[in-house]
Amino acid sequence: MAFVKPYNYINNQVLEDTNQRSNEEAAKVYVNQEIVAADYGTNLDYTEIEAGEFLPVTNDHKFASSFIAGQNISNDNIDRAYFTSTTKANNQTSASSVVYRDLYGCGKKIKLDRSAQVLVTFQAAFIAGDNSNTTGGDGSGMWENRVVLRHTDYTTSNPTPVYIAGTRGYVFEGAGASLGLLNPNAGGTAANRRQVQHQYVLSLSRGEHDLQIAVNPKVEYGWTSARNFLVEVFYL
Image (tube, rainbow, N blue to C red; front, side, top):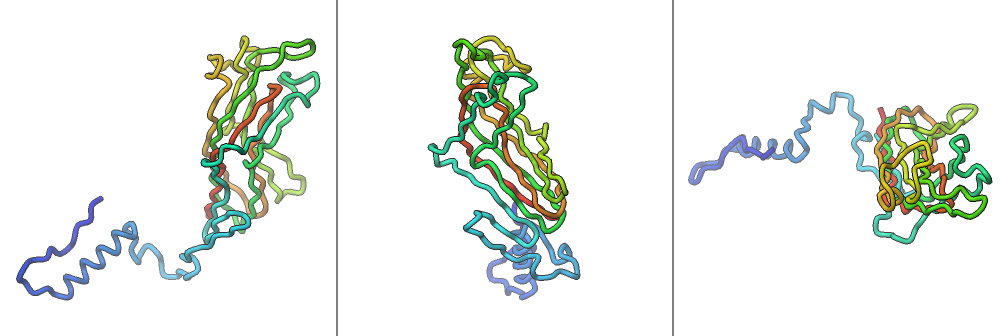
């Protein structure tokens, strides 16, 4: 919205101080996104509007009412996180064989001073190779590799990882028929080269929490290069 001055200046007319003050006050409100004194309340402590600080060791930006943690390596093309299903022995592509692997550079442990809303933003390019057709191998079959956000709540006596279904994404093997639980409805690069991304809001309690992107692989080799993993905390 454009700024409109309360008082329009007129040539050769004496400028009253009240008119000048009204224009200055209006400009101040405008540049502060129309926040006025009444919006702050009467019991505002100065620490609640402090500028915040940058913590270089953890790469966090910390404020009195929130903090931002994470990474963005969009200019770095050499960091890769590889994943493989070969550690599942003879159950590489079995629907009942679920062995999640955490992805490098896509995790953060946070400590909350009080209950908060936590926004997790993730984006990465995934590539899945084709399984070998040798004896004992699972063969080409457009097997799905599930990518999902994992949350572990360390405020409980028995922390158990929870895989959040609402964040799931998939990258598929690119050759063969669809033999997995899901059909990519495409083959080749349309199946095995995919962007996986999400934004997800969690309501978390006071204490330590671990947030991590994980993959349940069904291909013998695949890799990803994370473009963005960002955690933003907003205290209630």
